[in-house]
Image 1 (tube, rainbow, N blue to C red):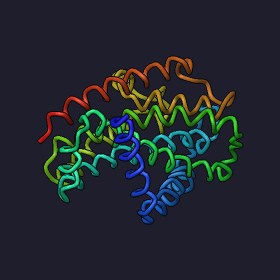
Image 2 (cartoon, rainbow, N blue to C red):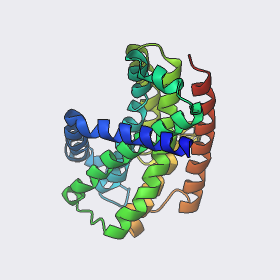
Image 3 (cartoon, rainbow, N blue to C red):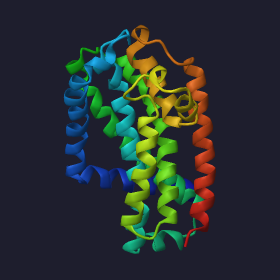
Image 4 (cartoon, rainbow, N blue to C red):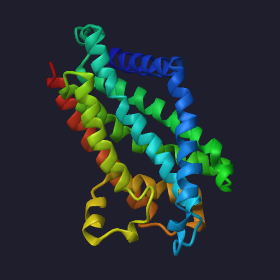
Length: 251
């Protein structure tokens, strides 16, 4: 029970801290709006032969982008907690480091899903009708995306000594994952070698799953939904195991 209480406390702390950061709440509205309206309008030519309006095509991709960037950023909490001494207080508590990692991971995932959910508010701008059922079905997919992505962020932060180092590595990891996922461009337009690379990108399966759930019959999926979910679950389990080991050995 003490481990469960510790996980809940760390989760609640991350969620409360997110709610108090007004700038992040505001940016969660502005950033996806810019991508949908400005980038989406300017790249309409990319929808030629796609069989669907380009802004509708990238909408699930922007949801995936928001989830990825927010989740990876959550790793910075490890560095902040280390700088201010809070992490030391947690680590000397009579709880396992696994519980500390899981608590922070669940808290970061909750924050990322909340921020990703804000994007659905703009669905009317691209003439997408997101039903209540579609939104509720999107939530488990969003959680699966964030579990792995937050674990990556926490793992990287556990290896970093400064905010500057984490920022550089985060960008280095984020951008390839995003651009190779098919969030902005159809994977069918990629060269063959890039398609192979995108096949090992976990966000590829997350974006495809979101398109299946959100766009329904308007989108021809890369693979069945159950395969996308299996790939995400496999990635999540792998990253949580790796993350807990590295976090447990961190200074």
